[in-house]
Length: 160
Image 1 (tube, one colour):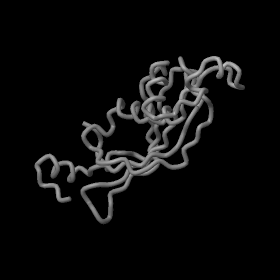
Image 2: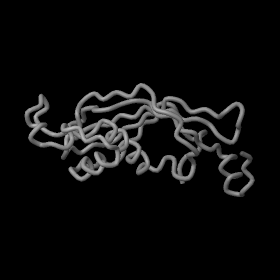
Image 3: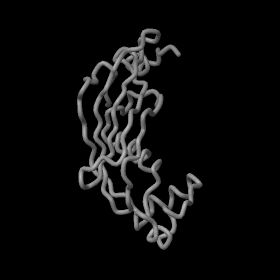
Image 4: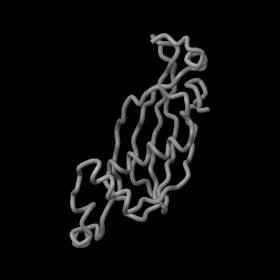
């Protein structure tokens, strides 16, 4: 079970397991997103670019962040909804074959003043490559149950 809003400690740092970005990831994301830019899909084109090879989509990196966050289990069964992404930056390319991991830092955690069964957790998300270089970062806000709200939801007595 994940954490409720009261259990998140400001400044707490967590690190995910690693994940290697594959060609399959990039090809499938190209088709799902509709972004078939040759920097992602054409090895010859990308070889002539300033980067010298194909890169993963920036938003694929963001998606990998959410997946790595899920693997950490902090919100398993306690999150209600994603509320937003702020200040996201793409700092360096993610190449096919890079192994990335996620480092999160709790920026804030508060119970809602109008809906005491839930609250908001804000975490700084940093996607790092195999050289410990931060390649992407930003803030993600998540609506999370309070302990009382989770108990009510599990018993079927949660007001909407």
